[in-house]
Amino acid sequence: MKTFDELTLRELHSIYVMRALVFTVGQQITEQEPDDADLDCMHLFVKANDGCVIAYLRMFDLETVTDDSHEITPGAWTIGRVAVLPETRGTGLGKAIFAEGIRWISENTDAQRIEISAQQYLAGTLYAAAGFAQVGDVYLEAGIDHVHMVLEIER
Image (tube, one colour):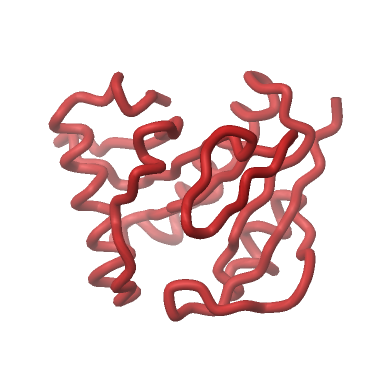
């Protein structure tokens, strides 16, 4: 887990290459990647033995940071850009890194809830299994069906 300023140049490069492979090439998303929110995020990632990032997510406080998918929301944090390289999918790595993000927010912030913009196809599996509940209807984001999901943090 690192802030943007704590990332090495090699880590940042590997993160951006990995996100481009997953989102731009793999999902053919043509919206801006990366964005300015990266500057204020916590970046959680797993590296392979060769130093390449193989799993990643970012988290930020919705009271102070926003991006194209989220509004300023006091009392909430978000997790986004959840990505696992295709060759490491099915290993439980995505589930593990997502659980670590939830744990970190719960233990290191005063957030009352975590709000995410989830790709709909993962809503009933990854996100529901982590305790998130869908709020509202399906909407289009970056050309992909998404749902707003919320996890209340018990204090």
